[in-house]
Amino acid sequence: MPTFYGSAIDSPLLLGTAQYPSPAVLAESFRRSGAGVATVSVRREAGGSRAGEDFWRLIRGLGVRVLPNTAGCHSAKEAITTAAMARELFDTPWVKLEVIGDTDTLQPDPFGLVEAAGELSRQGFQVFPYTTEDLVLADRLVAAGCEVLMPWGSPIGSGLGLANEYALRTLRARFPEIPLVVDAGIGLPSHALRAMELGYDAVLLNTAVARAGDPPAMAEAMARALEAGRLGRAADPMEPRDMAAPSTPVIGQAFLP
Amino acid sequence: MEERPSPARDEPLTILGAGVAGLCAATELVDRGWRVRLLDPAGPPGEHGCSWWAGGMLAPWCEGETAEEPVVRLGEEAADWWERQVDCVTREGSLVVALGRDQRELDRFARRTRAHETVGAEQIGSLEPDLAGRFSRGLFFPEEAHLDPRGALAQLVEGLAARGVTIERRHGEPGPGWTLDCRGLAARDRLEDLRGVKGEMVVLRCPEVRLRRTVRLLHPRIPLYIVPRGGGVYMLGATSIESGERNRATVRSVLELLSAAFALHPSFGEGELLEVGADARPAFPDHLPKVRREGRTLFLNGLYRHGFLLAPSLARQAAEMLASHEEEIATP
Image (cartoon, rainbow over the protein chains, first blue to last red):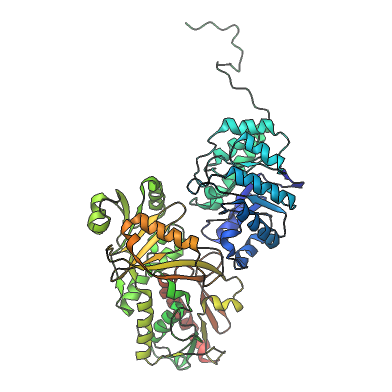
């Protein structure tokens, strides 16, 4: 099970809290999935006051670790301000750092991300950066103080799955000691399962569950897929081969024409 | 509608709150022969209440995309109820469309709703000539309706006044009879699980675009509905944000609503901005409305996004509960 900044979490599922039909459905989705972390957007709901307090109380009532995020921030400065607000609201040094560079694809701005990650780390935050799958960027984020990396599978809310498996494998190989989380792009349980097969520590998703016809059922499906992927990876799977390899001996049988 | 006379009904019911919930309850109960007092410290409906900022859609099937089954079932009675009480109901159905790359949103919407038919470019053009050629596919919900919310509230006030019920401008205190608490978010002092969900809306005038019915534009992030108010005036709504904040529309939200309207029809770009509004809707954690009883008080609350859609049903449920407790009411 993943450990983030020294805190062990008993589920590889980090679940977002936006877009559910109702808080009751949200709570049931957390219950069915056993998700260990809830991400929550601070900026959009805050309104410069504590007007989002009722919703945040519901989130705290889920009984899981809260990972506030800086969703909707388009510059390092905005993200740093939002992170400070989040720390105060949720009394946690954790922050999922989002600095958006493109409004259509919601692709992270790598430059703003590194800048904000460095500053927030200096301020004592424990930063979970939402990043692209870029290796060099990942390296810079680690140098900036990040002890977790959260590359996207594909754009937020797209449900396209793992668009660049090669790069995700490279990250795993290059950062064996850093907890890696696929964040964004998961649409199906098979996508989540695949991330675990690649050796990722956890998956962060939201839309795939919240916008499913039956969110609690999808939440449970995701949790089971993650468990299957983790078990499969740990069981040391066989190598793929280009030829058939019979699992029963053929010695002594007649050759087929 | 008039039920058998009963001594219990001589004891006036006190209704707290003259928003859509309180006015519908008062109207329904007066129709059923009850004596009613209607109290609201802010007086008749206005900017202070969230019904003022409503869209006025009577669209239970469309709401079924995300809302649970009771919203659809109970909402089905709304259009008939309103049509009996006011003259500003338009029964033209509603039309749902999506921009080119969001066509899959239409598939999902169709899967999760019912009482609709798929329409092509030609039918869209005949339903809404101004949208002709802009969309190749859509969903038409022929049974749906919309109303002018402010006009409807005013007509309920008039209708009650004609039957001797005027809104008393004061806070309520527990009387000897039953109380219907319809104060919306203000009832948080009694209903701990009630919270506000902020909605922002825009009203604009754009006579260049002529739409007869509610049009919904699906989008993965920024869904929009446009409700015609007549005279070239349109209401654009609405955001849904987890905040109890009551009067601050953000630039981001308004930008999103206006961009979506512009995408629906570029002529909205020439429209005149009349109003930008925001308020918080009262919601329970399951987003379903409830009639909750506590002693001799009934709380009608949690209408969330569905004030005009579900207030008639809530009023009926409250009236039925009162009728079933009538003997108890007669002997305090």
